[in-house]
Length: 61
Image (cartoon, rainbow, N blue to C red; front, side):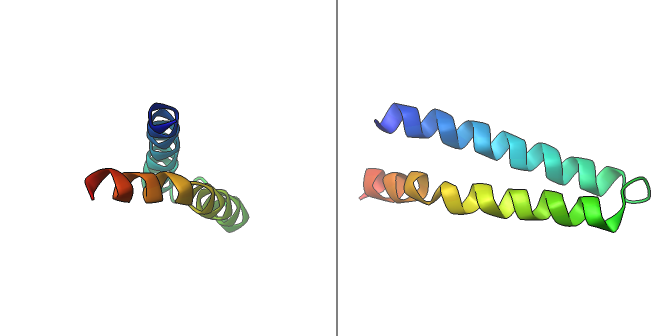
């Protein structure tokens, strides 16, 4: 179970990192609506990965 959550966290982190990098490098190319959608999707991913964070906290205890 821990290994599955760890890989899921790596995938979620890489998706968030790629989207942040894309937003930072192409500010003029994207509309504000697209930026809002990406931000909302990123926040949804962060909310869904709450279980992963709690598993990591338990691991270090």
